[in-house]
Image 1 (cartoon, rainbow, N blue to C red):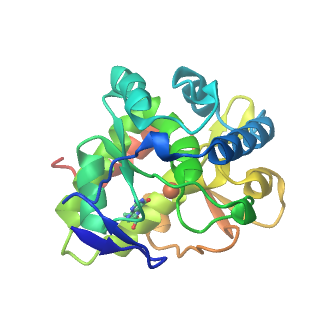
Image 2 (image 1 turned 90 degrees about the horizontal axis):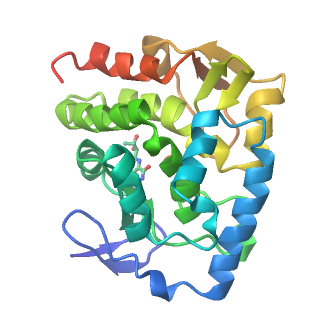
Length: 251
Ligand code: HBI
Ligand code: FE
């Protein structure tokens, strides 16, 4: 079916809003841009990202250079946690998004930011989605959390709680922090894919850093176009999974 993206592009998509990644269509400049984004962020994340994220980067060979081929990436990811990466041209409707997550498919942008968007892009491009989100999907407990979140989202559809669920996603999957024996570390995709926020979220004195509390997370508003005023901190990824059992005991 034909859709119009938020940027006004008309794109032919499958019923589930996926498209063919068409890996061959990336230019040498785009592959080089991925490498520059990757190298810069990897350096910043030393001592800042949690070990599980860094292990995922290595295990999925995202350091191999160039924009990853989703088919090859999915083979590696499937072998570890049964997840695969599917290409989408833009954000997809909530229901479609939840259905993908519930079936262990992560929808990742198939486009890469332009050179003039090198430091920030609002839309989730392939660097935000694949570098930011995919490494944690190789962690068994986080992989279970993301599936449970998707299943819960489908169960909650039509019950007027989507805003609460969006906050849970935002303060964990996108902007979550975790306590480790070596100190506080990053795991949220929105932070680990942002050079400035990777430093701000851990080291700036201004934001609140609140221990994860499901009720409080679900009633805390968030900002899309600026650093967060509050970050929520878990002690383990099991805490996230427990939160879904609280929300959806029947799952
Ligand atoms: N679609 N492709 C894509 N990626 C997302 O991260 C995404 C989405 N649709 C909805 C959405 N996120 C949020 O509203 C979630 O909280 C559901
Ligand atoms: Fe994201």
